[in-house]
Image (cartoon, rainbow, N blue to C red):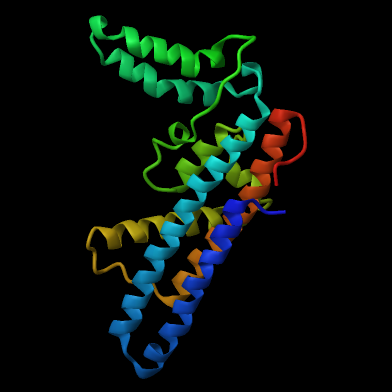
Length: 225
């Protein structure tokens, strides 16, 4: 059973595939200008849908954990440190005479993460506040917060497949960034788009299952999806 986030992502791919159909007449007519425009639009849309998946699945995972009302000891230390990083940094940047209110808020919102016999809620926004684009290295970092050491190794068996998946995701993000920064030389072909599409689909479908297993281990219960 896929997560709600994965279902949203899979449904969004229909728009990319519709544009594949739209590009074919242009290619047959030799209208390369239109074909290039379609390819650039597909890359931007696909990258946006791919990135949205991670924000959506992150919120879904945190909602699941908050409903479990876990003890602080069940959560990975790296996740707790990341969650507390932002308020601590904010307190550190504030003069001593103005820290009282922020310290009180920190104790209420994050104190439960560091002591027993208390319960609280995680903020999903904090766990992805650092993410600017879903590059492979950043995705590996994100899943490490869930005790998945290397998500690419976890979801692939052969090094060659792992390398292709990494490259497909990296090229998708790089192409989207180049287009967003006005680089007209970034002109993915329909073959490129299909490769990006396959990489994004494979990653999300497999990572979705990997995260469900990780959450089940954290909660010592059933998978959330």
